[in-house]
Length: 571
Image 1 (cartoon, one colour):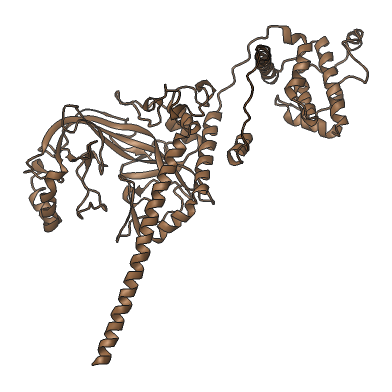
Image 2 (cartoon, rainbow, N blue to C red):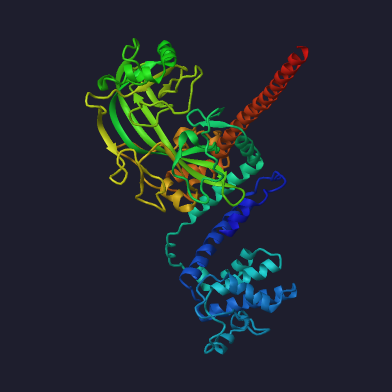
């Protein structure tokens, strides 16, 4: 993976590509022939490594002749024999067993010997163990020599292979490569590189430092930074170092820029809901604010059958409706300090609730429940206050801009009227979740409104992005699935710089496939950049207001003191 790491952190290509004239038919045939030969060469190279492909007596002499000539050219270019041997030994991938070095003399011919013009050499070497028969060292040796001579290694290897009988024979199919974690490791590198580059490009350290100097809170549902008089934001430098945070209350989080990668269903049920348009509750909200929490408890909660914390029992425009409640764990990619200097990619999980209704209802469709984090949709946010100063109750927003408050009325015994429900599993009943499903699998977190953070490393990416998370017909929701884009339009942003699916690290049409696609076409980068831009804009605005207010307040205090002094002097 070192090559990928270097590319991920290095500079981009410079300069533009010159327009090239169309290839002639002859040139196109040459290109096709070379492509075919290179594919065949790669197959033989794979056999040489995985199966230890060996050459017959005649072929080993021809291979040794090609390597002898290649070494002579490299030597003329200034390469020392010891360095040449060491380079070959370092690149040979097949097990060396007890060998500690590569000796060139075991793979070359004496000066002047040429098996193509000296047939007697076959008899002369018939009883000799050298040149040796393993094919891989010849291929590696030619590559090392060509590179030192400034030539294309594939050209030199093809020149040799065309002389060998193994080239014209139908080769047996190669062994299937054993499963490895390279795709997930590659995705880890790409996400880390993207997040680090965005943090550097946008000087996120300055924005984070400015936020920490002010007293703010983060409205997770509306993604809004708000000045506050309460001490709620946790002073966490890194959510994954020295430990991974899994008990961070969502209203006390730090606003690490993040985007959703996947929503995993944990609980789905049919239920009866009670809804009311927000506009119809303004007078009740004003009465609630005037009378305070004590009035609410005395007059609304005294009867469990009538317990409607966010919608009063006598609301004239409220209505009951059947619908579906779906509770998800949202897996998000966020940019955060890594704990050892610099920024990295981190996976954040948070609660996410949806309510769905038939299209013929005024609030029909699929809606994210703003302010909803518990199954009963009953409690308001602890810190959040709306524009009137009142609490923010669970509600849904329609495309028209209208807002409907939503709750689930309790049954006479205090239960929830849930039907046809499904849970993730016995290990995480209901909406409970594993904060760290890799290092602490099976350890269930019983307060689902808390956030959890883990590194965006290969084991976690593989766990979340390659699994089948269906729950009783409810699929996981990946916002980056190509079904959410005009992917069949060649001019769509989806198809920008997108390689063929079969060339991806994840060609299996999993959630990881779509996320990898959206790294190539830039959609994930654009989404993260938009989050950063919004956070910076809000920080600048709050910072400007703070600077102006602190100056105004300090000057007012100075004027008050001076007024007292002036008043005393005039007496």
